[in-house]
Length: 252
Image 1: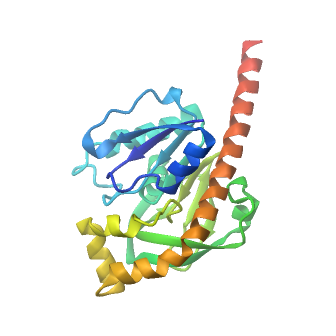
Image 2: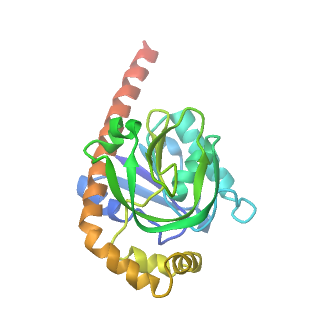
Image 3: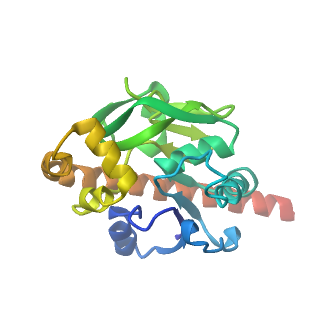
């Protein structure tokens, strides 16, 4: 498959997904929006993946490219109707682009946490093969406060009601991070906004303590990322088949 990736800061990249995409022979193109890179023709891609970043969805006055990015997401989902995966900020951008709302949390959610799949989540193909409760890695201070019309919550916990949601047939947002690698915590801790939130939430020496807590869980997180990627590939194959059938009907 051909994958387009929107990034908002170089260290928030697809992480472990890049290894999976290489294994599968997938091609991907990264657009670093914060560096002014242009969005290519969206019709050339099968899957749009939007990553995280230290900015908030409403900061268009500081980051003017957020407006065009939301327009591109809206076009991708509403007009092209192709599979979408948003992670953290990408999850929030999906909600905002489609008419939902995003706001600051009372307290940041950083570190290991568990989310529970809703009934809709347990039935959704994105989570095929997952247990009803999923261990996750979190690092966010904003949340989806109102879903777009017709969206369904797929995962939740007590800290953040919308941990995962689907809008339409196959546009997905995940508030938590599934892409982390052994270098993620060190890389993100170098970002001033992230370090401040980390130390405010977890206290002194937070980087070392968080890394020690997460490192033993990396094999499990990688297994979850692999399963999720396989599920996305299956969703994409079904979407392609449906699109091909629709195009044949229209040409008759």
